[in-house]
Each structure stands twice: as C-alpha cells, then as structure tokens.
Length: 170
Image (cartoon, one colour):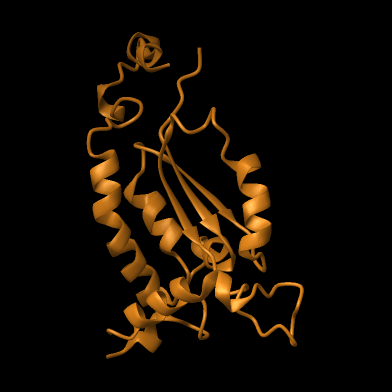
C-alpha cells in the first residue's frame, strides 16, 4: 500500500502561481525547507478572485485530503480589488474584502523599504519572498517538526540489498 506524505497546500492567485518564479520564489523556499518532510503543492491561479476560488477550493482540497494536510496558505485579494470600471469580471465589491486589504497594507507599511518587497507593485520580489517565507517558517516548524524525513538517508541503504531498508518505508 502506498504511503501518503504530509502536505502543505499553497492556494491563491498570481502571488501563489508565481511562487516558483525567480523573483516570487516564496513557494520554492517553502518547498526547499520542507524537503523529504512534506509535499508542497502550489495551487495558484493568476487572475482569479475570491468568488472563483471559493468555487474551486472544494475540488482542490477534499475531505479525504485533510488528514494529510499540515498547512494551507491563502493569498487572495489583488484581483478582487481591481477597479470595477476597468475590469468588472475580476472585481469584488470592496465591502467583501475591505478589512483584509486594510490589514495587509498597514502591515506592509511597517517596513522603511516595504516597496522593495514587491517587484512590480503587486508580486513579491526576492526580498518579499524571503520575508513571506520567514513569516511562514515558525508555523511550518510547529506543524511539521515532529515529522520524520521520508525515506532513509542514502548512506544507510545497503547497496547489495536495498529492499531490506527501502521496503520498510513503503
């Protein structure tokens, strides 16, 4: 029987989708940090708003998945806040998202160079990605510190009889 690995699901809009890009590498930093502990699953959908994500989320994270999920991040809001006259298709009324946007902006304004956290005014720069990762790291540590590495260390595998050790992990 196949063993299920713990999972971290990164869910959101382009901030998540671009999480493996050179500048927006926060997803890659999370995946690197959790190597052989968890599968890091990126479910970013550039251009999506909270209405659409609310519809697709139950199909992406089902009740059978929840036992293996250690953390889900949600990065949404940029598309919701687009001016309704410029793009009514993505816009979600401010009342639905006002407090969350206010909190995020206030938080970012606490930093002298918070503009350096973004490479284009919206998407994370390398500095911003590192900051997001550093904020997630304590949560990741708390939720995954008791998890062993998956599969044995390579030097512990007997080259003449690899099944002896490897089969015990499957």
